[in-house]
Image 1 (cartoon, rainbow, N blue to C red):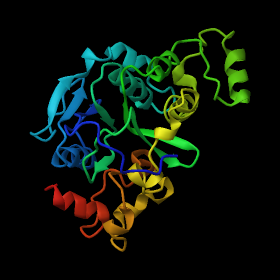
Image 2 (spheres, one colour; image 1 turned 180 degrees about the vertical axis):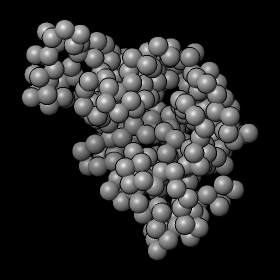
Image 3 (tube, rainbow, N blue to C red; image 1 turned 120 degrees about the vertical axis):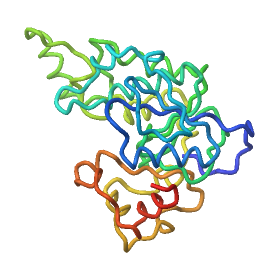
Image 4 (cartoon, one colour; image 1 turned 135 degrees about the vertical axis):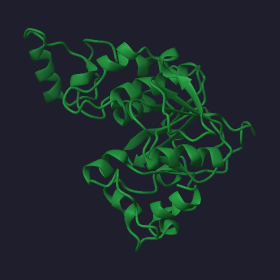
Length: 274
């Protein structure tokens, strides 16, 4: 794990930040995410298939189909949840191949500019797992081709639990049953893929320590809505961004609710005029 956050900055020019949005208006959290990166000095590029009519005016909108055909997006939609998380996993990697800049999920809040110091920008969410919510990989790194290649139909990544992999292989002989990403466990093509392949390709030591991008633990996602908790207690020394754990907020019924004014999230909303 990298413990040195004082490495030489490769370029003074901040990379553009790429985001993906599929369907419907942005919630205040997505708006906050985009505005926070813009305020830190990054150019923010929002990739969308059907527009995002309530995106902040300062955010650049581009056609996501130029990176990933919408038919592929639909084929990667998860079977049970109808989530676009898998499509986002693929899109993120495709942008790395294009040398498009930094990737950020729309539940990442930027608190300081993110400079390029290494070939890879990524961070540990736990001691044994690298999250993908912030990612940049130099386009010549071989890991990118392998990250994209694992999406091929019929392939089961080696980090899938052996019992689950065995069941998937047996079911492929049933009518209309194919081995495809949409039937694999949650996280197979996200943090699990990035962690395993970063280790394989020898770049896992470039991942930032947990407080840099993931100072807030997933099981504490509700703290952002707690008026008794200060924003300063969440942001640690060296923190550049905070992951809000969108899926956890949905499960808690908090995603679409208005945060208390004095909560950490409420204060951030006020800071950016939301």
